[in-house]
Each structure stands twice: as structure tokens, then as C-alpha cells.
Amino acid sequence: MGRFRSPAALLLLQLLLLLLLHLGGLEASCTAGSSRRFITITFLQLDTECSYDYVFIYDGNNYSAPTLATLSGPTVPPPLTATSGYMLVHLYSDTNYARAGFNASYEIHDCPADCNEHGSCSATLGRCSCYPGWKGDSCHVEICPEGCGEARGRGTCSAEAQRCVCEDGYAGDSCSLHTLGQQGDNAWQNVSCDGCGLAPRAAHAAAYLPDTGALWLFGGYTLNAILGDLVAYNFSEGRWVAVTTTAGSAAPSARYGHAMAAYDGALWMYGGATADGSYSDELWTYDPAGSRWRRRGAGGDTGLPGLAGHSLTLVRDRWLYLYGGIGDDELSSAMFRVDVRRAGATWERVVHRNGKGAPHRVVGHSAVFHAETASLLVYGGFAHREHRAWFGRRVAALWAYHVDENVWLQLETGDSGAPYLHPAAMPPAPRAYHSANIIGNYMVVYGGNAYLADSGDLCHDRSMHFYHLGCQTWVDFPNLAKAFAKLTDTAGYEQRAASARRSQKRRTHDSTFVIVRIQAALATRRPNVRAKNDKN
Image (cartoon, rainbow, N blue to C red; front, side, top):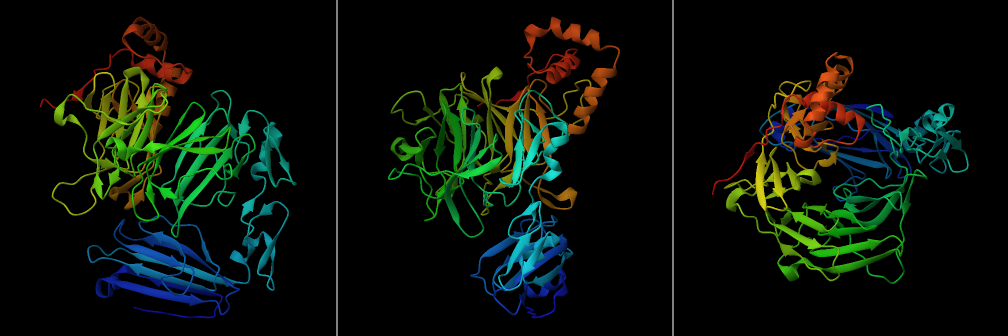
């Protein structure tokens, strides 16, 4: 192992994983000479084997210090700042593959990140005084990005509130997000900036409550702690608010890996891994009107074990369906449901009719309900690996559970031959811990732990994927845009539209203009509902 110290303000640190073939790990530390000084490390390159080789960054000079980052793969992180006057970097690798490692530089300043050139530093206090238009400990947050769209009538900049105040119909960090109508420019909108009221976290649960106009979020974990806070993002005000519950009332303990759904103006939450290492079997509801949590019972009373990494999906505004997850270190393929309309209702196990036709035991999957086909769609996740000691394998399978017929079907996800869509759309890589939603006649999947070996060993995908539920095919997003252009410019659009109207009784149409026009193009071919059904 190697260790270095230097009082210099700028050093170049280049560590190669080739060394680790002999050493198994490499350690480097830096001291700022004072606990009141700050060390900022900036990665210029990162190239480690995803999920096997890691770079650990600590805010201190030992492994008990707070962890700043755990890095793996090729994604270069933003600059990281240690506030203790020390920084410890540990690079770990197994002996399988030797990649390039990383190239990073660090700087030592009297204030965090030297105020990012957006403020003046007080060396005595170790604090930044930000210039007008900037805020944050290191003056890294722009108060009113893009001028709040004031020239377009979207919002104004409030110096008092130190944020954009959006007009009705707009939201987001810069008032660029349309909240009314169907406007959009196929671009991501930054709703809340890093360091703007929400502590960084993972494995939390969240749900949107329309009556409150807010996204509600509970728990999760950081690299150093498990969280038990409830916060809400108010879209009209454009800010996070820490929620205080009624004094003296019961509340769920800190947890992560739990699942949440919204019903009748309240949050419903089940399970999660807790600080003592156990898996919770508690069902909780939160009523925003009364600012009160209420425990609805324990799943163990009805055979439902404590779980984490499961899904919780509202079906027909009556049932909450729970599927999969991990409990007591075993993956689950069981499904349970509870009637949320009935007071005192308990969990009941859902028994399907096609024997071994259920998906694998799985965790980190997504589950959404498609009302038109009365189906619960389960996609991806880490599945149980037979006769293997490690956690499991990522899967790309898409399963449908028909809630009326009580049967599982594995959907085909290959080429449908549909005109004006991608002629041979490739299914996304297997993934877990992604998100999925039903939008029109599409299941839209975003992100996840995918380990894209053909894309530079990416550990996580940041792409959006569309699955057409009528044609049962994945559609590439760029080609979906081309489909709109063809529908607009092709002279035969009227004939296709007429054909679509004639076949209206045979197919499900969406209400939005864009999706209806895609359906018109598909009307020349009736969707063939194909499934892999276990004959046993």
C-alpha cells in the first residue's frame, strides 16, 4: 500500500489498477495541515470494473471517518470536498480485470471548494460570502437559473426567497417545467437542485398526492446513516419542506428499501430494512391533513414476511398488490394484497392458477398496473440464481399478472414488425432498481443498475425506454421521434387514420393527441397478443 502527504495546494494523483494485481488495494491520504481547511478532489478520469472494483473516499484519515463517495465504473463524479482537514482515498480491486483506474487532482483551500469563484472566502471563519445570484456553503447554487424564464412570462426571481417564483402553470428550479396541458420539448427539467433542501439518499420511497400538489418522500440511506425523515416537494412553491408530524403520535422507524403508494389522499407504506438489520413487516399510512402516521398492522399476522426491495402497486383504487422483495436474506416470488377501502382489512396471499408460471424470486423490480388489460406488469430486477452463492442476476423479463384471471404471462419483448416504429427495436439491457410508469399505451422505464458492458462498463443506465403495450415491442426513443415526423409528413396519414377508426373496437386508444397518431400508423396491423404460458 502507498500513503502520501503534501502541503502543496495542488497535486496530481494517478493510481492504476494494474498495481492492485499485486497489492489487492492501494491507499492514499492527504492532510490540509489544519482541521479548519478544506480538501476538494476532482476526478479527471474513472475506469474501474463495475460492481467489483471500487474507489472509496473518506472525510478523515481512517476508515471510521464519514464516507464521501463509493465509486465504481466509468462515471466521473462531481468534485468532492472533505471538511475535516483530512481525506483518505482507498482503491480496491479483485484480480479479475485490470482497467485504467483513475486520474484525479485535489486542492486545499480555506473555504469549501474556494467558493467556486462565486464568492469571497473568509479564512478566519472558513466560510464563503456568496456574490449576488449565488448561494450554498460553497456558493455552488445559482439562485435564479435562466432568469426564471421571466422574458417568457414563466416566473420571476425573488431575492428575498433566494429562488424563482413561478407563475401558474410552471414549476421547477428555473420555472421551465409545464404543469398544465401537454407542452414539452423532450428534455429533462431540473426541478430541484443538489443542495436545495433534500439530503442526498438512496433506496427511499416516494409518492405524489394530487390534493397536496406535492411529492412526499420518506427514509432511505446515505453512505453513513439510515434516514427516517418525511419531506415533501411543493411544486407550486418549488421547494422541499421538512414535515413535522403531530407531537406524541407514533411514526415508522428509519428504514430503506420500503415501498410506498398513494390512495385517497394518503400515503401507504410497507416494509423496509431497519437500522437493527431486520426487515419490517409494518403497514403504515400517513394523512397529510392531520399530519399523523397510523400503523395499520403487521404482515406477519397473515403470513406476509418482513421485506425490502419489493413493489407496492395500487390496483383499481381498491387493492394494494405487493410482490417480490427480500426478507431474512431470501428472495421472494410471493404476491399479497390488501383491500384499502375496508377498515381493518388484512393481507391475503394471492394464489395464481398456472402453477409454475410465476416469475422468478426477484428484488429491485418494477410493478405497474395497466387498467386496459387488467394486468400488473412486473419488469426486471435481481432474480434468484439457482445453485449460486451470490445475490442473483439482473433480468430483462416482462411478466403480466391478470388480476381477474389470476394467471401469469411472460410477454414477448422482441420485434413486432409495426410500421413507423423501429423495425427491430432492441430490448433494454437487464436491469434492477429502475423506475417504471404507465403513460398512455406505453410502459416507460428509466435508469437502473444495468451494468452495460458494451457501453464502457456503465454501472447505471440513464436512458429512457418505451415498451408499446399494444404491439408488445420496445421502441427506441429517437425512432419514436422519427415516427412523429413520418406521421406528419406522409401523404397516407388520412388513410391510416381512417383504418384506425374502423378498427377502434378491436384496440385500445389513448386520449392524448400524440399517442393517438402513433396508433393510427399501427392500425394496418392488429396487435398479436403473444405470451409464454407455462403449460404445467
